Image (cartoon, rainbow, N blue to C red):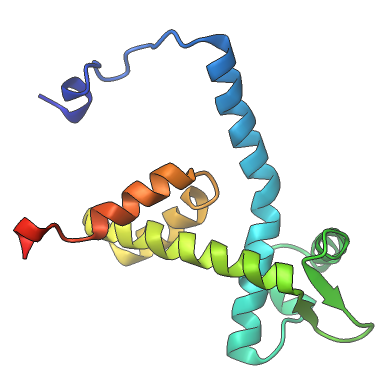
Length: 156
């Protein structure tokens, strides 16, 4: 019996969900896609500041695999959202709100990676997959991942 069957479903069985529930699910995914860019940028900016002392647009573009004008446009959006500040001809810095978001993203990333590693996924794949999963996992699911990582008393 597969895990899907043990939960009362056949593999790939269609489920007739209420339209409102389905719409809510799609809206959640769209919202996650919208915040994905900001989360990726602030997480990378925090990492660059910690490892190199500064975050320069050219390096951000290189690390994200995008063109410098794309970084400029997105940094403007992050600045408007109050997540970064930038002085002319200087590096990019996180605001307090940007640092808080970066830390929350890193925490989510660490939990997802640890969970995937606990399933036997190799580190390179776990890191790559976590980049997508971390933006779409709910707080409830993230908490379940974290709880699954805590050894039970019977395991010790």
